Amino acid sequence: MFCSQLTEDLQKSIFEDFWSKSWQEKKIFVISMIDKVPVQRGKKGHNSRRSNTKFYYLQVNGRKERVCLKTFLATLGIKEWTVRYWLGEGRGDASSNTELTTNLNTTATQDYSTSKKSSVKDYLTLLPKLPSHYCRKTSTKQYLEPLFQSKSQLYNTYVEFASSMSKPVASRKLFCDILDEQNIALFQPKKDACDYCCSYKAGNISEKDYQYHIQLKELARAEKLSDKQSAQRGLLHAVTADLQAVKLCPSLAASALYFKTKLAVHNFTLYNIATGHVTCYWFDETACDLRATTYASFFIDYLTKLLGEDCRDVVIWTDGCTAQNRNSIVSNALLRLAIDKNITITQKYLEKGHTQMEVDSVHSVVERKLKNVEIFLPSQYASITKEARKHPSPYQVFQPDYTFFKDYSLKKYQIYDSIRPGCSAGDDCVVDLRVLKYNPNGTIEFKKHFKDDFCPLPRRPKPISAVVNNVPPLYSSRLPIFESKYQHLQQLKSVIPADWDLFYDNLPFKKK
Image (cartoon, rainbow, N blue to C red; front, side, top):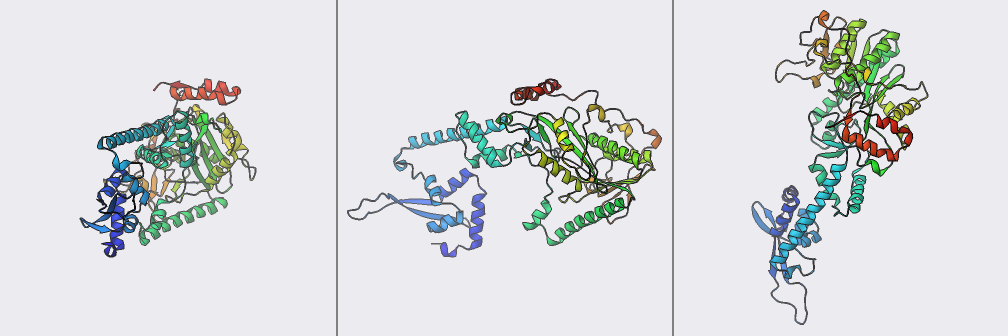
């Protein structure tokens, strides 16, 4: 046998090749690597149930080499019962079945398997989904609403659903395979786990590249600490800002919610790292959607109030989400404010994967307060947030409606048509920016590294006199939801107090 010549490298190569195949290909491969030879003679006076002898082979450098059963199983990483099942053993008199019976069984098995797949797909189709907020332009992945904490909970709910509908229940593995096939994932709040650091631990990143990444992280941390100390000395205002993970309304422990779409509710939070003062803007999807001008409206409203009390230079720390913080619409709005107030506003971005900020503590406190609390109206999120902290001061909470938001995306409002630090193909992009400085003279400067000197943005700004001063409203009325969501919310009134029915009845809606 070839067992003694089978090195670890050969075994690893065979193993990886085997597990790169589909499940059906694995089955075909195993069957092709086993030869059955009828037993030539049995023991005298002894009736044995064994009708054949098996010879096991592995494909080594294009040749079939015979090995023992133990080596065969260990190399492929499978169990003996799996092999017997694939060979048709352990199913009664499978060896004596005719070819017709085998074909019928195969067809029945395939039909049953198709039914299982259909039951999973039907279940997933019924579950409401959310688009990715942070990569919606580059990803088609859909996320289930944040009702499920794990795949186990999701699968257990599926089992209950399939059983109640008298449908065949798929295995956990088939369920997860279809979940991946349909590009559906569990909704997870944005976390600060770093893909780069995880890749380094897995050995996919060199030590040199990893150390450079850590250096960038430490530089950003040191820069933020310096700004905090300057703010505490009264030299400037230092603010951190972020959007909390989406919330749903209504939110309660009722199985009726699983298959119904619900109202999305958001909280944009700003944290003054010198004073500890916090401002939260809670709004639902009928007030505004998530676009760049939405965040520009929050920044301008907050900073206008802050500078009205004490007009000093401002530093804003955020993550690098381009749709939210690093785009020309937000930049032009901040530049316009810097001109109006005759101050310098600086936007700084933490290193990707290491974006922990003081504002995250607010979201953590709110999440704890919301735990095991039933929510029937969006305004309840605001009420709970107001009571979430006592010291040094309660959180300041606003609930803006559609009249609050301004259209900062208008072309005639843009001083700079782009904030990209490069001009030609292959040059630096917006994601390479680490610092943007908005000067009161109407210019923007940038840094690609915290240690660099400021450089003027390589764009020609419009004359200040050509820019309108009054920004028009973004909406003239509340945003309608889809009629299907409206109908789902109407159906959910059966699990919420009747006192709140009027709110759901007055929601605007439209047909798709």
